[in-house]
Image 1 (tube, rainbow, N blue to C red):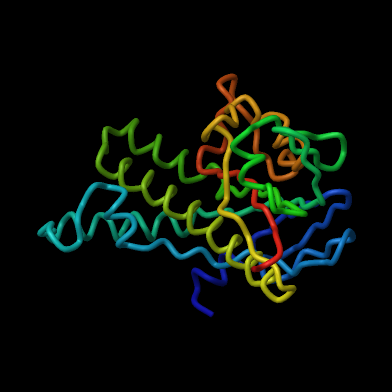
Image 2 (cartoon, rainbow, N blue to C red; image 1 turned 30 degrees about the vertical axis):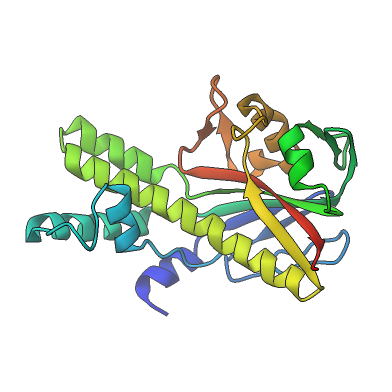
Length: 240
């Protein structure tokens, strides 16, 4: 195991699910679920892709001629970001029912959205998920800005976005593999603020997930804090 992977693995990670709560001391320990059939989800070592950071910054790997100083700055900030990662995940799952454009979930939670109802029309279960890499990267970014190191701030912010996306992508793939072994398949993931699932719905969704357990909160404008956090709903249906 590399030093960076070991550093991430030693951080405490909190995972929760409805109706039970599980706390794992390491991302390499599975979360034990007590409802339905227990899936085994682990929090991975998060790899921050140099190429994906380039894309976030607006560079084209095939077309942009990168000077040595810029390339070094990107690599340095990826290294800084990797040391600041504090990944946490909350995961919930439940059977669902649909009526018209309303999706009914456990604990009296419902989502009123024609787009979500369409997404889940053939589904019998959903996963709700929220991930965060913590606030240390955005704090370091703001420190760069206070020192007028704008380019470093921009790179580090991109590194955080890439890391959060890599995190939830890996979690999705793990869930996909679990459900595939049962003869099921997943919908794409869908987040508040897309289509007709209004951003204001984030409040009830995160409450249902128990996202406060991993210190995700909302601003008055319904944006998540820490900033590098992602939430989503994923439907489960029988494979054709």
